[in-house]
Image: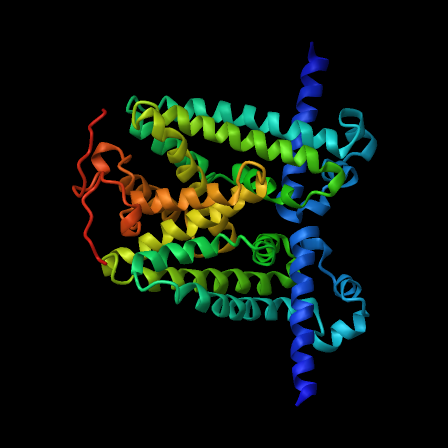
Length: 208
Length: 208
């Protein structure tokens, strides 16, 4: 079934081109023409897979989440310790590779999508953040009390997102090490740091 | 000197129009023509005050910071307690009024400013976040040890910024009360909550 694989690849390429256009040029640059041009093809080629920009945007979210899930398999097998897995997830979430950082910028850019595609963008944001929240919640189970998971997810999710914004706004001042240092300090203050990195200022329920 | 006042007012109006255009339409919508149109005037009128978009962008930051400083005077006289002042600042920073929220969106939109204005946008981000950091640091003095101020500023600044992004991405799920609840929970976990709102889970150095 080589034909099927080919189509699948083409869709991945189109989605990737869309992410790069959103990330670098901003929301208004994302047109079917621009995507076609970026891939060295025609608008018609893009339209063959996605009849409209709304359709393309609607496919962006599911494809990104699939990639993230694949990524995470490698991240998560790294440790048997729940606190280390939580930290590894948050560091992964900081998106230090170019490809992932581009998709984080694309996420933000969709805040200004034209009104005809606002519903797609809104679904994208809603499901994307739901997915991220779910991943954090999963890694908090067994570390914090059940009733505290939601508020802890709020804190961790917004913090990491704010670090990404700071790094985008002031890239010179926010090298990856500083981003990770903030996550580590925050985990420490929240009593969620992996054992070795705990400072002795608080009583810690050792979960490990 | 009524003529001088008039010019000043005109500049404020132009800057405000620019913020609204950036906030709603996104970065690429900010042209001198669009600003003129929004004010019911001509491009020439805008050019009289700001010869180029770069000049306009360069004036955006200082004017916003002046407004913020004025705003804050009212916020800060509200309490003599350092922890309350810190909380009040962070809640103010959440920008619950339409005008301020628009300027926060404008801040983000400048991430995609065309390259000829990238230097203005970058200065805008750098000085804007420096200003905010300075304000937080000021309110942390006397609450946390001198050597912890910087890392605490990092945590608080990025958290609030992440809350703003969450609220922009999912406005239905992030009413103002939820935003404030995250700030309160975070302050509590960091040992920075005002006395009355402390829960009895940690030892607290009473500073008040």
